[in-house]
Length: 237
Image 1 (cartoon, helix red, strand yellow):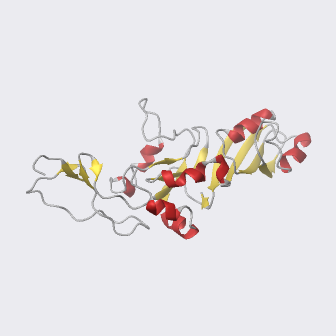
Image 2 (image 1 turned 120 degrees about the horizontal axis):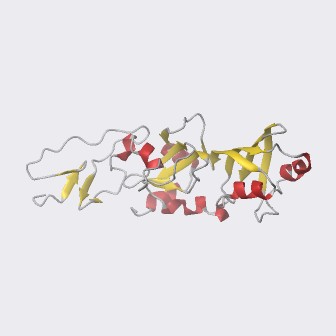
Image 3 (image 1 turned 60 degrees about the vertical axis):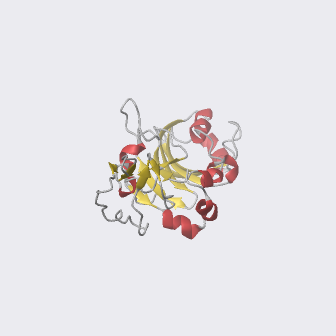
């Protein structure tokens, strides 16, 4: 402490420094220990945390950007979970800048690797607007779940939400989740993606979360039993 190596809430502690009360509670997280750091390293492993962000379109899935473009870190810094007591919170998986909707963030990445893997079988669900409207000759193929085969992908389940000659809204579900999979499949069939919104990722739903809002789904993860045992035994990242 005499060397100023111990910090609390971003401020160096000295032997004579008063120590404030523990960090405030966050919804669903219970009592938290104060974020003490030694040489910038959190001394107490943080409790597991899983957050859901409704990512707006045009926002990069990164914590910062040297060019000053909008990033998910901008929204995270406005939350009560950003005071350091949960360690480093990072996006879980990707969602390209042109897409919107549900994005998960966590302070423990490793236990979720199977959740992100194309082999994990975790279902993702999206709402997609395409141009032109779904052509009659493509309807049977799309509704059969085989639209991805020609483009080199596995089963892609499609429901028609609303259609017209100039554009259509589709509900698309898949489990492979490879990079830009939906855009690649639709481009292969001659459609332009106008809007792509992720509605669900496994048991986690976007629900009525507004663009830019962040909520904790840690308790939902516990109740669903999603990787929780491995999560609790994971070392601090």
